[in-house]
Image 1 (cartoon, one colour):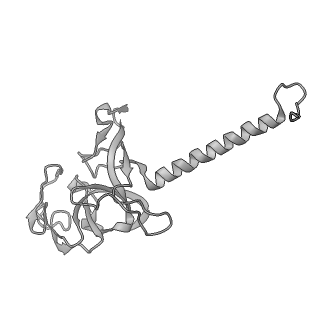
Image 2: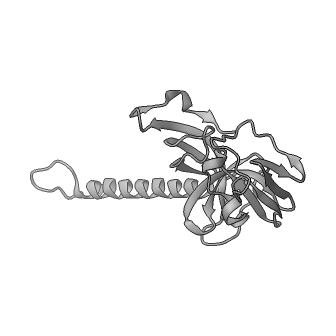
Amino acid sequence: MSEAKQFVPGTTTPVKASKGVFRESIESLGVALLIFLVVRTLAFQAFRIPTSSMEETLLPGDFLFVNKFAYGAQVPFTHHRLPGFTEPKVGDIIVFQFPENPSQDYIKRCVAVGGDTVEVKDKAVYVNGVKQDDSFTVHREPIIQRNPPRDQMEKIVVPEGQLFMMGDNRDESYDSRYWGTVDMTLVRGKAWITYFSWDKEKKFPRFGRMFRLIK
């Protein structure tokens, strides 16, 4: 025996069918939202470059994706991390929560990891006594002998589980030279790819910077 269907006067659509379509739409929206939250929390996160501290590697107006899988995504509301594919290493560009204000996200290059010694002499960075490659760095101001810690920083030892982070635009970067190291629990993920770039002065996209791997 076929099921009776109630019709609303003036329409040709069964009430039951309308409720079914509405419910399916809500459920689909809920699933899509859940997938988005899982991906954002555990896989990838969008990030915008707001300052010039990483020039010329990254420019203000660059939009990028952060790979959270690389080092292991942090379990929400805890300090535990899922297993990652690798550990942060010198040269990686990393997004992290600012130690002095975890509600803010910063992006810098990893200069040293736990157990390393770091020193800055006349703007040059030495890790474990070895002068580091500075081909990607920018210096726009002269060396000032008495300008700690920007141009001169005494040797420190990076604690285990910590990272020493610096901006590529060394003269205009507020980084570990000033506020110390970054605990691994504050790491968001590894900068992966720029998907868009906007030149604020020219009010025009920088097409040549789109879909570029970050390194």
